[in-house]
Amino acid sequence: MKIVHSLAAAVALLTIVACGTGAQESEGSLVISSDPMLAELAEALLPDLAIRSGLELREPVRLESRTRDELVRYLQAKLDKDLPVDEARNSVAAYALFGLVPDTLDLRGLLLDLYTEQVAGFYDPDSTALFVMDDQPAETLEGLLVHELVHAVQDQWADLDELTSPEVGNDRGTAAQAAIEGHATLVMLEFLMERMQGRAVDLAEIPDFAATLRPALEGMRSQFPALARAPLVIQEALLFPYLEGAGFVQALWAEGERAAPFGEDLPRSTEQVLNGDLEDVPMDFTIVVTGGREVHSDDLGRLETGIFLDTHLGPGQSVLAEGWGGDRYVLLENDDGEHALIWQVVWDDAAARDRFIDAVSSSLNGLPKNAMMQANEVMGLPGSVLTVGPMLGATYRVVPQPAGG
Image 1 (cartoon, helix red, strand yellow):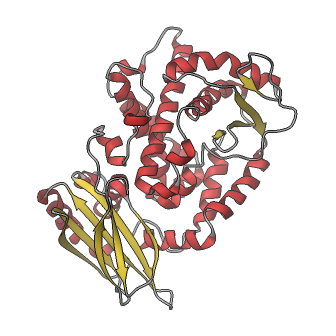
Image 2 (cartoon, rainbow, N blue to C red; image 1 turned 60 degrees about the vertical axis):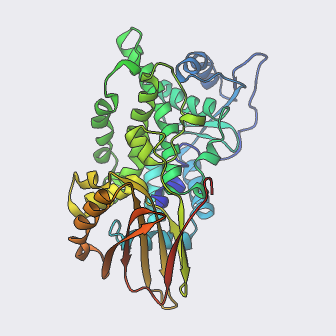
Image 3 (cartoon, rainbow, N blue to C red; image 1 turned 180 degrees about the vertical axis):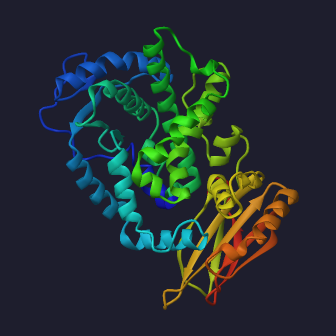
């Protein structure tokens, strides 16, 4: 979900301030830090986690601690920069027309609450520095450092900011975030399980490891009040990178080589994360609007198409999103502040498209404005188009994008 992704991509990738003064590096050191305790702990962890992650450490990692007040101040500044009031308003308006959030949602306030209650540490690619909240219990610090140090090593091999930039789109950015977080989560859990069991553990050998991880992550909904009161689509968008991302990376490991999920192994859509098929590439297209004012555009992706179905048809109906082959939506606005939505989905085959249309058509009265669902075709592929609200004088057409466009 873009209204989450624009900041969710920053949960583990934020910076509070530049590295504190006084950071020191001794010759041959793996860590640069002004905190001797953190530096010593990270120095001991890095060689092992580099092996576990399948990535070689290329240069020292910068590591500092920050206070919770510094986190809050930075998150507020980050919201002002990355999710200004107008963009937040348009995002909420679009997802409200999908029936996924209330149109009164204070998105910026909710995101600030979510991140201040959950963030314990984060790696920032901009300053190539890792930050740890200074209120973390000593018994959890080691596991936290392992997770975030993996991000530091990842960033020496891939541009994490570029992979998760809002410019790549909601679905592709969420898929990349799943690879990044799933990778770090697996390394952390394998490390902690070895410490607990006192013997070597290879998570690649555990069948359907994601299923064993699900109950713990699902429990987060009740443990964090801000998360518990968030709309389902925001909850799922925040949990997806850790849960399904871990399953995706574990499947890579199970193929025989401890690969990091970058390069050819980087998923380009949430569908690829869910089904593990990197050859299943969604169609890339845009919606060209004439005679109306477009104020916002993005995609839901396979993940949020499933959440749309679960929200309106009931739990378990996300299976009707199987066969999704790409989507795009556009939010329109007139001078009176009225909104309308156009959502185009492309399907792998007519059967998948027809199942989706039949199911959604029966629940259109659950949307906040008059809605209409129709079948169409995009470049020879079956399509469905949902319009919500009057078109405000606009017409539209679907234009396929060239590969890589």
